[in-house]
Image (cartoon, rainbow, N blue to C red; front, side, top):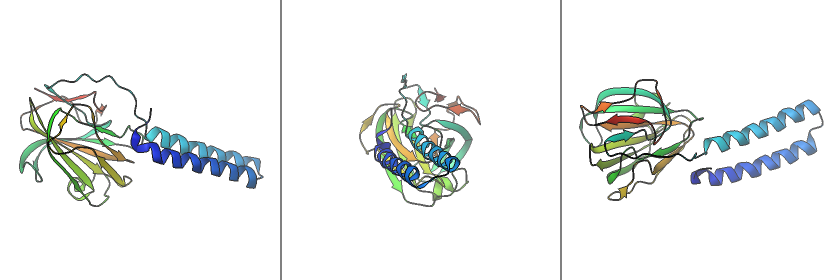
Length: 216
């Protein structure tokens, strides 16, 4: 199963791979060179298909839990000053995604969207300290029953060149439903109220819509 954001790219890649295969078959005589080039075409197609995969998962929603918005690895757990929306101190949990991870972004909590904004910006590597403030990014805030307002921020990385954000202000959203998609590697930051019980550790591998990030 593939995510809708990948349909166009998958179709273009498939046409390109077919074209390259025909060209290789017609123009390359050397057997070893042909094999290497054919293998390269297959690998390209597999990488694109894997990147846009959207595996079926059984989500167990709970208003008393904050779920990971994406697949990846926890790289930050710290108290920070959130400048854009809250303008006060929050607990930040950041999940880094490699190009091999599923890149669907899911709502960590359910509730009402109170803020949704896109920011154009740079393409610093996703783990750069200033990427959260200077890279292309989207900021979404959802007001939940148990945690109040929870902010999650999609951040483009050095390879990511497009962030897709589905959140619309004032709409009601379900926990673990699609919030957006980030193409080709990046990270997502989650900002929680000070004192929230964090249930993950640094370098822990997490799954979007499955792993519990925090709980009451």
